[in-house]
Image 1 (cartoon, rainbow, N blue to C red):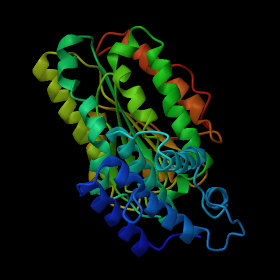
Image 2: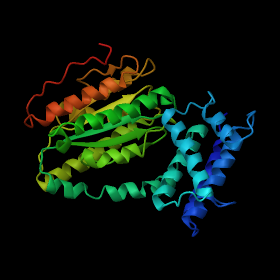
Image 3: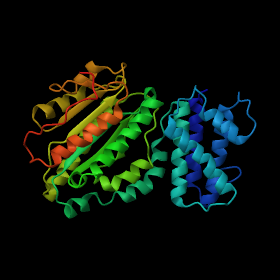
Image 4: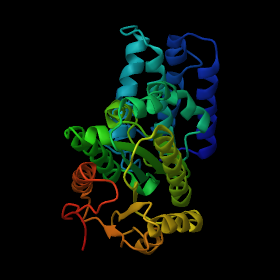
Amino acid sequence: MKLDSIYARRKYNEIISICSNTADILEKLVGKNNSLSFIFHDVIKQLSINSPERSWKEKVHYVLNNPDNVLGSDLIRDTDNLRKDFSSYFGKFQVPSEKDLYRCVKRLASFIAVVSDTEVPEEIRKIYDQPIKSNMTLQIDDLIENPTTRVPVVLCLDTSASMSGEKIDELNMGVSQFFQAVLNDEIAKYAVELCIVTFSSKATKILDFANIERQVSTFDNNKLVAHGNTAMGEAVNMSLDLLDSRKKEYQDKGVDYWQPWLVLMTDGQPTDDISSAAQRTSVLVDSKKLTIFPIGIGSGANMQRLKQFSPKREPLRLKGLMLAEFFDWLGKSVKCTSVSAPGTSVKLPPIGWAEL
């Protein structure tokens, strides 16, 4: 069963209203009539209307394990933890902090988005992004403190509804594996700077450029969730704009950098206009100012559309769901780049994860 989009928007507005009122944190989380837990209960009630279960815990598990709701293991875990958190706060076994409030807002809004196939409103993203942004204030200072030649990498990732379930789980694990591969290398962990842009019904910057050591916990607290359409053109344009801004910061601070990398991954085809984005990537690739890796996931990926972004490098389709293998290869590849001289040709590791 899916939630009606009108109902979902009403719940989003209630979340915004609760977060903006003057009540204390505990009241916002588990107050009797106007709280996040009250919204959560109402949503579960709507989704479990046909459930034979009686207890609250059983109703939640019924919804989370309903095959009609392809949630993915990360979202199932986060939503069940949300239930546990509310129970803990209600019983006053735990005193919630502002960070706890933000985490609950994100988990609740992400759950509603998936079960209603809607987008989390920007007003709510701004609420739960607050602690993240405060952790990213060292972006410019890092350029001064760490003069290592940089490898800027943008992961532009499809998180539309078709990526639900096993695909989004594998994608989350793959990105985490990439983090660890880079962190385990004494040179790469100071050289590689990562930015993550996702696209569903719109493009969203999940992580801005920074040293990877600063970003691990941020990503762990903001795992990717699948829902919505496939705004690929918007996401690629956003990725290129972010790369342009970061390159200017490198230049202003006198920091050298290798040719930027853009990894574009999708399991389908764009639902928006890609002509402008495709033209921009083509010009940058032709002028040797960008390396792009267009990757198709599964048989539904439109490889002809991906090829429009990459005039010189054929898009590759993963073997099955070999996302972990791809990100392991990507980690090894950026390591090779980080120990080479800017402007020189770099031999990348052999590819075993694609249908060649």
